[in-house]
Length: 164
Ligand code: FES
Image (cartoon, rainbow, N blue to C red; front, side, top):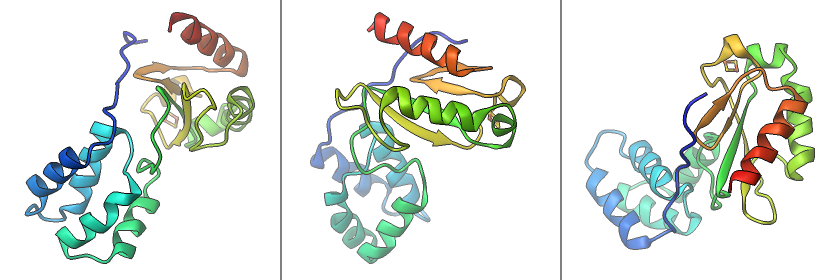
């Protein structure tokens, strides 16, 4: 387990977003690096920014929307304070990943891509956290956990809530 450090995202800011887009517009395949940088800064892509991005890169809005909706990571709503990432790839699935996913959804009261009503947690599915030997794997904020049974998930979540 690594030290608990949580990434805090900035609130969406058009000026910064425009600067990120302008700084990257001349790169080959500029859309992906721009979206990635927006995600790193704000934790999501504001859908209202799509027309600006499309104009800047000379793409249609549908093309930009298509890329955003294709990649799971490109969320379009602000994430909760902590993102819970559940691995849904093969090794984790073989070790009870599906049961864990159902449990996590129930515990948090949200589906994948959802955020709890209090804004504390977002639940995301990912496809391999590089921790296959300790499947099933979960990431809570920046901390990676292995061999996460539903019971262990509850313990980790409870501890995290208590630490906030
Ligand atoms: S398959 Fe889950 S961590 Fe690799």
